[in-house]
Length: 519
Image (cartoon, rainbow, N blue to C red; front, side, top):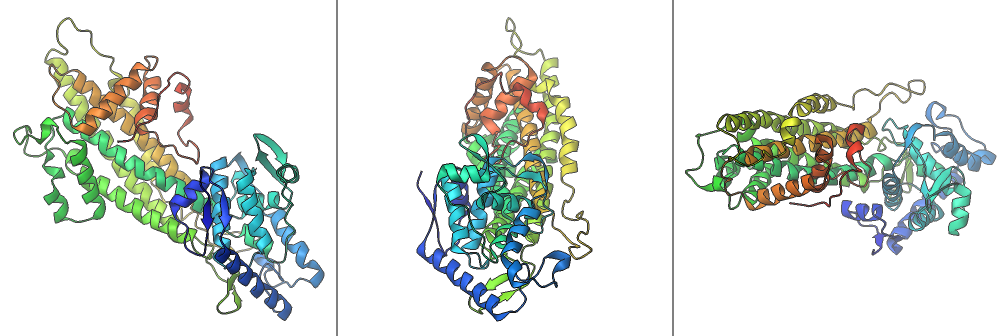
């Protein structure tokens, strides 16, 4: 895999994901020059004797307490060792790699004042595969202090890390990889921990998955349209052009591609002039999801390439400025909004299932499958009620996460963004939406299997239905196993950050073997 070079230019989300997937990292000369220039500002400020938050003063409520000259170095290690509190399962390796890469790219923006040695040790850890083990429940979203401190501890030879599949002390992991532990200079400790590496890195992973789920939602809706003989006037280009939201235009175009060759495109095929809203507004609702994905992705890109340090080093002004850039407010709210859009797509899917249910039993009352043929296994019908149980969970996840952080540290830190929670809840919501879309696919398949003569399907829906049938054939014949197999084959984009699906879905993972497909 080719290396990702961090330069003075912005890092793309795709480059970040490449690092997550194992690409090596290198710092370009212009990035190193920026880091050195930023570090020089810190050195001059220290020599001036002026107070610098977290460098020559304590932090939080101790912000106005000055440190002696002898305390400067010890302060940086003190910050790293005292801010790593947390509990819960450790963050997945992919997310830890993302967090390290985010912080490294942030240091290269020149706002941190970190030493070149601090940047170089992060490069070495990524390239050697040293992955700090850090707790998942720790940050309130005003800089991910806890997990970033856990990463910094390994950089200085403390803490714990995974290296080569073994859990080692940070010092032992660095030793085995031939990396010298970082000796913290003034400003290095606070530069390493006062960053939103976990929130931004996780957000990048989730936003990549969200785009894939949005496309998969179109597939499920299109197959339901074919199973119910829906009216395709809703996807015409003239409709999208009349209300030119980019997401709606893209959703309508994708639906047209999926349905290319379908019997529905025969102008005489539709039995009704228009359908229920759960069919009729698919481009609008799926388009809204795409538009909010685009907004959230932009928030990720801005945060990824910002100088979000406090205090902020300004090289042009040769100044160090206390500020609140560590607050990823736009990102946190964007993911709150994204969950609302996800819930609406799930609501449409669940409502369409009611129409598929009606269509199925209408076909049953008309005689069912041809004589002398055994009825097909009907997994979608069996999973209809579980789908109804899933939607309330998805709806509750749409509640905002960003308004609930309490005041901490003697009222000095009296606001938080809850960015990690907002992103994590969004990943969970995508998992539940996947579950609903799988059941919709299966139920649409059940309806089509009951028809005496299956109509011509679109190119995309025919491919999807074939994948569903192959997944069913690969499994033991139980609803849970089939649900898992179809999800893995057609929709599952659990991504690099780990699988956020409820435990109930994982029991079937050993009973099926399926590849993944993209439509």
